[in-house]
Image 1 (tube, rainbow, N blue to C red):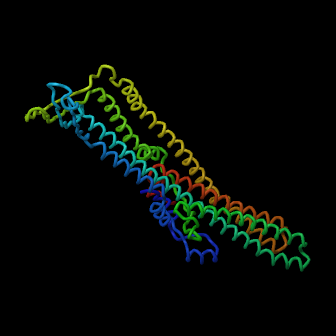
Image 2: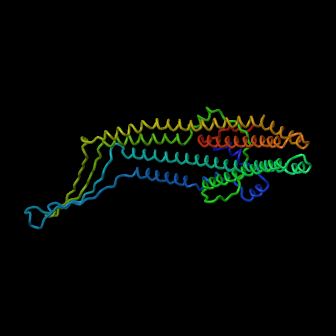
Image 3: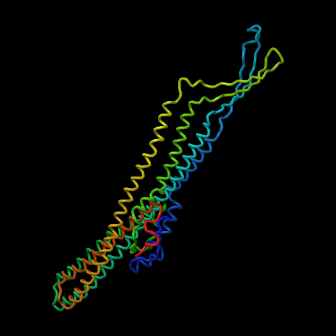
Length: 422
């Protein structure tokens, strides 16, 4: 379910680009599904998380192991022959085994199992973080690419004015300064395009690094940022945070700490060491069987300090989980408010600002050809349209970046399936 809305918005093979860029995309174009698949397949953070799971599995296996038996060999009355009258050498072969009492082994296994479960949740949290980061980087590359296309279109629109200006200049209806102003506006827009090209290169490099590439092996990304989704209610998104692996991990952490507390309490329970031996008497051909048992007396150390520490650590778990939850809510809240603001900006721009500025530009273009408007007026009209289109573009970029952040933290779509577009 991860990033369903963003997949719908960005995975289509629709992109606002120049004809030259479109030819390049057919040669080496990257889509969002391809990006996410490659990130999950090769990113070393997931490989490290897998090794952590394997390590915790090894600890869980080792926790269930029984203590090894021990073997011993004793020689009594060992002295040079005849030096101790009446005493012969006695040899004893002993086999001893520590017997753990109080379910200590079960407590160790439970603690290791908690570690294992926590590692699995951490791996899933890492996966969601990577998918979110990759989606944000993809959107950044797509936005830079779309911005370049917008600026190319603005340059083309301004360049169409140059022949008209030249004709007016030849007819004596315009001055050379007006031509210079148009050329200055074109140069400024090209400068902004160059800055966007650098931003595109940086975004593609960041995206490539997430896919384990030193140098990006793609020249363009394919997607559509123009969609206008509607957000799910914030309460529903807050409820979805409960399924975030970062929070679910605390269930496993609490199980581990409860098991550690049990182990601390059981440490005061003494274990028994049982032994069996075979004794041979040196002065007779007789042998004997020897049995033994020993255990410590828990009078000096009952592990009270260790028990207190384990109790406090177990009780701290809920506070740590709540801190984690509140941090996620703050992050999601910021992204949600940013997305909601972006939606309002886009709606306002599309309903009023863009139609008004484009209508004004069309009127001034027609009037300019008839000599009713000055070059400053037509340049101002072009600039207002360009500013409005770039504001819409920035709002779309902000919207989809915020959606990717929300969905990366909730693990589900921030836009319900029935409300993805309007």
